[in-house]
Image 1 (cartoon, rainbow, N blue to C red):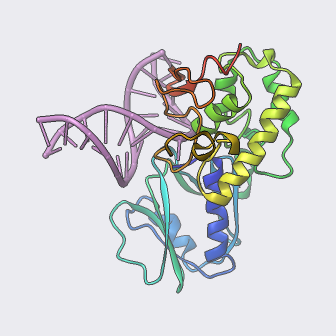
Image 2: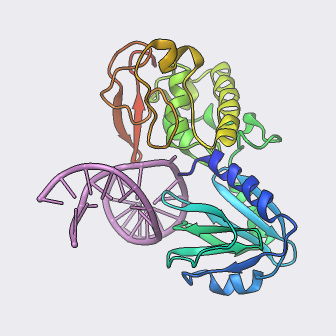
Length: 269
DNA sequence: AGCGGATGTACAG
DNA sequence: TGTACCTCCGCTT
């Protein structure tokens, strides 16, 4: 499920339901039981995201640090909460609502200092208003690594995943195999600015849509098509299908154990 | 029933 | 660079 937009949306969803509430905290599946016992009945005072990391602040006790990884999910519901299934790592619950966490890579109770250390090793996040794209450019512009790999490196830029990576490179006509130091400052600025807009829209709609109005199925008279993730895209998971713009075949390749998608005609070296 | 994948990361060597 | 981990879903038998 999760690229950065999902996690920022989840932070807001937690604030909506649990902020300033005394919250019941349990770990039906057991792996978080000790920490859940410490947190049970405490007040949620903050919910914050940086990239794909979610932090739930319980004023007196610490932060719950959650990373969904590839499979993790957070699901919300209204009270009464049903009996939890045995994969629920963490359940938050008030009289009105509940949230169930399953399959996360990380769910741990951490201190302020440990939280700060996580921020320190993450790059700027297009969804954090104060974050500075120049910090990312500093690394990108001196790197011989491909821009496709750099966009996925959370130390360089936080929150971009496989969908936004493929789509933002397509939208700017940038070949994924160009190196960081081969990009121009203008290209980087365009990528960052676009990610800010795309990811904000992602938070709002809770899905990734990247197709410009003039290229929508309605505008181009082609059959509607959304990806499994729910959004409309140019190249992601469209291997061997025709490019929406040039009609050429979308290519795919393995890059650092992830599937890369691009249009070799629209995205130039 | 059993498989292969999937919007991710960390660690070993 | 490869592998392990976490869960769910859709496809194949």
